[in-house]
Length: 262
Image (tube, rainbow, N blue to C red; front, side, top):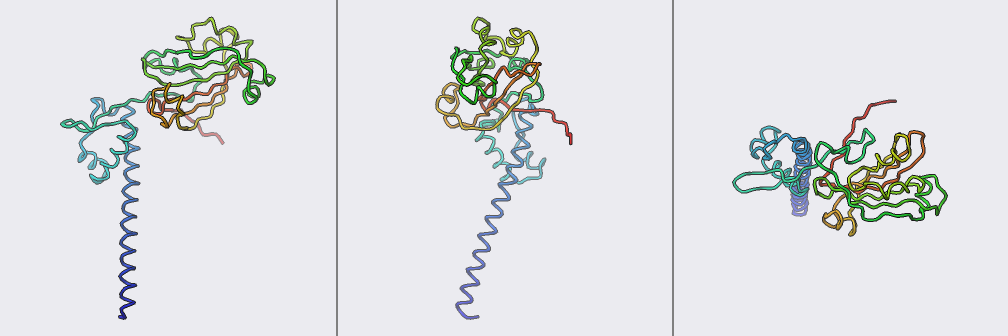
């Protein structure tokens, strides 16, 4: 074989080896992600009541994974702040997420009543001209005053969400004298309107916490937060509550029961 052909052959083998190595790394990373998803579900659903995960070798045998894959999966969960490594103990659960249902129209205190007390710190409340997008959603003339409320909501003292709320003023005028610190706005709206709430349109997405939101929620700057935009209507169809809610993504998990209908 001519020298040039030998060089090309050697280079080709080297490229193949590098490509194979990268493919193995990608496959291992994929498997680690898959395992992390399974373990995340287990630890959030209380599958480890004593707060300690099984040993790495036990997890490897249970899931048919290598020890390296298990370690990578645990590293992913550590990066999320869900688990930590304690010398002499092993991997332990260090964070808890609270379930927020998306299949029923409920206030936060109603949703989390089994997990403790929800309190509201009213940071801002008062009439303000409705920005055009708000006026359109609430079906009021642009520039019309609406009641604007900003609340920090805590569960057992833990900062959980920052809520920005817009309410038509004819209904909102009954709120400033109400017990907003300990009562969901939903209950107050129903009492003021004299009819139950009917339905809500929601949008959920992940956004990065801005400096203000991060400071209020006591979350790292740039941390991922769950942004829930919700427009709530009375039973007669009138829109009465437009909310932009930023949930700490490391403290809340969204869930729902969906039925297939074609």
